Length: 123
Image (cartoon, rainbow, N blue to C red; front, side, top):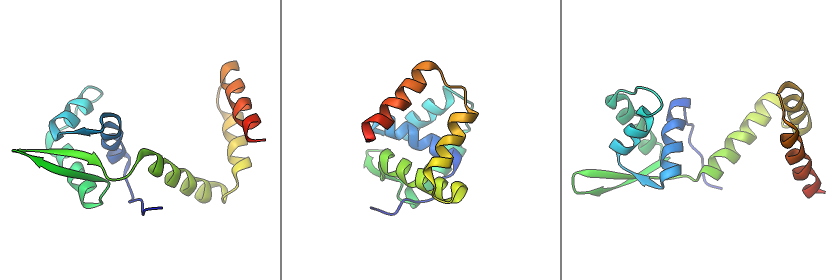
C-alpha cells in the first residue's frame, strides 16, 4: 500500500471535490468550495499547493491552467484514516467502536437493516 500523506480537515474538502470530479482546475475547485461556503481564492490555492507537495494531488499543465487529479485514491485514504482512527481511539478493537457508534447515533430501521445485512454477509 502506498504511503498516505497527512491531510488536514480543510484539505479533505479539496480532495473530496477532486475525487468526485476526477480532474479539475483550481477555479473549478474554488467554485465547488464556494457553492457551500465562502472561500478566499488564495486560501484554496495555498491548500492545493500543499496537497501537491504532499503528493495527494498531481497536476498537468494545459496552457495557462493546471489540471489537478488525485495522487491517492479515495478508497486508500479512507482505509488509512479509518484504521488510524480505530487504532488511536479504540486500541485497534473494532467491536467497541462499532458498539459505540450504534449506541450513540440515531439509526433508522433501514440503517439497522443495512448494518445487519453487512454483518450477515461477513459470516
